[in-house]
Length: 402
Image 1 (spheres, one colour):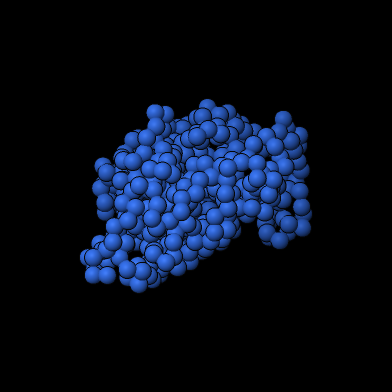
Image 2 (cartoon, helix red, strand yellow):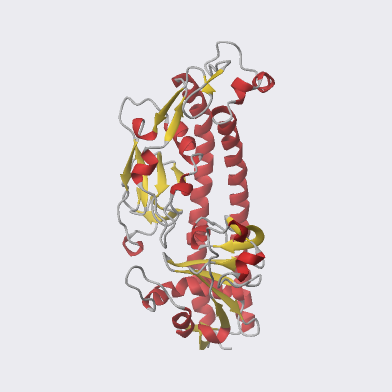
């Protein structure tokens, strides 16, 4: 049978820290610095970098500590229980506890899967008035069963195929997304068909084509834009509605409708809240992220979803890429639980080309978004299957004699 330890017996628990954000000398270095927000947007089992790096001076100025490749990172607040494995040496902010596993007792990938099972217990050990947090001391006291090291390694080996498949899917999705995002940026941000005659010729757009790009830029309050195009506020073309609370325990496993949180698909349910296709924006946690929902879906209360009035005539696909390139995370409040104000988003500018141009782009983007969303759906399903199989394999492993 498995031996019961406390987490502190099989791993050293290390906290993190944040350099003073007003000191530019502390950021932009070559030391990967991970936050819970980085973890929430990561679809892989492994993490090697975040959105920001820090310098050696930044590391030395705060309580952040370097942790080795293979360390298990767990968000300790807002929310508790996001998990990943360090792909290389890195450090974290104070919202993460890192477990440096004793390799003579435990396999780090096995412990990673076991920690997924322990999340409800970890939450029970947490405390806090504003938001729950698990301290390093309390985390260390949590009991954890571990079979022999050989059995742990066998379990981890059987589950490794899921990560390989997931990485292949994510890599394919990234290539597809980069392609269509590149087209949107060239057409509607850099205005290359207007500014660059050589670029226009490479597109082989004939005169009078429905793309209907003008040949000159004109001044606007937001800088030069193509002649005949307009600048409006986002509130002029769409509205944002709040998602609805749906706790994980209330979701129906095997349901047909994806449940969206601020970090994408977080589960499935047997009821929809919104007809698809649609756009979901992270409101709290991973604030400002923009997700495309290809089919009917259920956005939870950490999100907004886009609502359009009839007669606005702005294709949803065009809106999606306009929002995706608006750098919404920049407008999120830098608090313990990052959030973005609905009115801030609605007051941002959006460029409005002629209807024919938007429809041409949306026609091109529609099939690409469908493929990309299908891959996202597969990644989410794969992760759900992986968790269930891991739970079963670990249960069986704990029954084996050492």
